[in-house]
Length: 24
Image 1 (cartoon, rainbow, N blue to C red):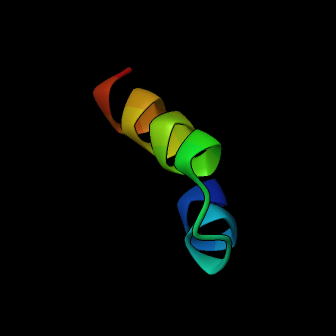
Image 2 (tube, rainbow, N blue to C red):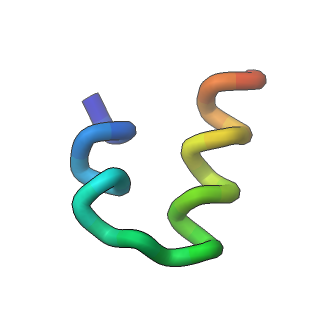
């Protein structure tokens, strides 16, 4: 799951990507 990989990185861009993936 990409969310886990992005979770490791606490970046605004990554956070936005996670939101987009979840809302996709």
